[in-house]
Length: 136
Image (cartoon, rainbow, N blue to C red; front, side):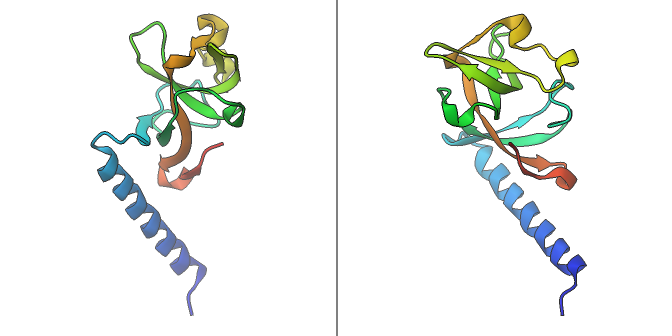
């Protein structure tokens, strides 16, 4: 009979293999997904510095992703990716905020981001394994 520990170990192995498969597939350009690493503390407690996430590429904001964590190109620094929460949008631009407002450079200081700077929506945290899972 399997114990809870056996099942947990098997789940971890499956998860590790899935992450490895995603990584190997994404090393080359993938039109649907890419990987990103969280830098800074602006998204604490949702995401911590060093967290590694899987991002589904999207190019225009929609009602479906308002409230979700997204990756966008920083308008100040030649396209450096920033990870923030999408809080609103219109035809030409969108607004993002960090979950840790005291430590976040976001739309409160940068203004609205142009729609073409949206890179994707964060769907899964794959590292650290202890916190792996869907991201909302």
